[in-house]
Image 1 (cartoon, one colour):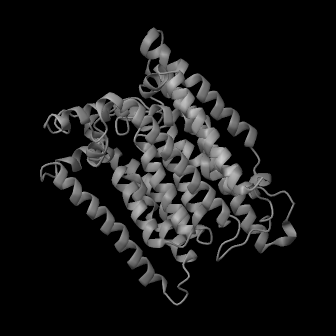
Image 2: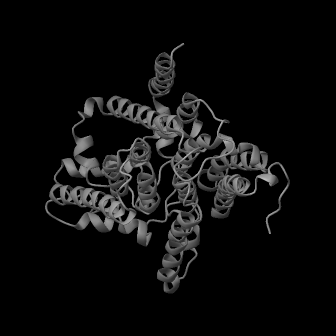
Image 3: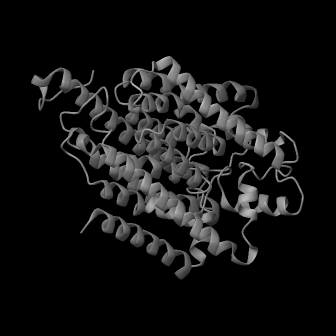
Length: 419
């Protein structure tokens, strides 16, 4: 069977599965939309609908303190007739998932994860088929649940994957515009700019170009695209910058402490107001501190820096969800050559599955049954974060071990210990 036919079969099967779940179980999307594990205050589809209602009735959607999403979503979804709103949004999100899978396949086919300009793994012959990587994204239960719940984080993740795919395809300008769109939708992708510039530079065919000039040019594309989206938003909101505080200030200031799978909400519920600004700064500095260190230590593998940062953001950003974890899981198969070097794979997978199965139960005990409290749900989110941290740490250890064996080939296959 040719690759083209296999790809059509893969995409058709994934789309058919999503169509079946959307239309055979019409109450399932509404059920998932309200889940704290999938929808956050800054990505919720229900909140988007509320903002859209206000927007179509000539009322500012940012007045009520409910809508925290980018203004460009409003005219996009306002084009959909109310009579077919559910069906059209279902088709839209299915198509977005297919675009994401295509981006993952393109990155896998490029082979940058195994061999790049500055580094070539001694295990580069160990690889998954590119369609297997795409299938890993399309049939991931987290991805399917996210598609059914229709949070706007799906669109942000799509922009991030398209930016990475464009970078490995040697289309740096397109990559920067896509990353700018992702940063416009959700603030944290802006932190991916340094490793994305490194990836675009390494993949660039302009060998005579120096890094400073390339970095400046790529940064100009990125900030120019963000400024363009901001200008459009300014016009859409009646020539007002009010949306900035609601769209991006909510990430920085954390005014909405709705429970989610992250670490911030419970901490700041218990926080005294006098310490709030200090710890907001500490948490954000902690999140940003990984960017410089990883870019310096793993300069030879900027794609892995991007992958690791996406995993870290899935743990430590203010409003994470399983959509962020699914984005990270979609990139891990690109590094199948380092799987033999990982040591605690079973423990990590078991921890994530444990939290996945017990998370909804603990949330039910707290919110609906009344037989628990916030500690129940926060405890299981800590287990979830622990599982993701183990996976991120294991991948990082395996890549560093892979690099070390290139420098010390005589140590290949021998046991080492971290001190």
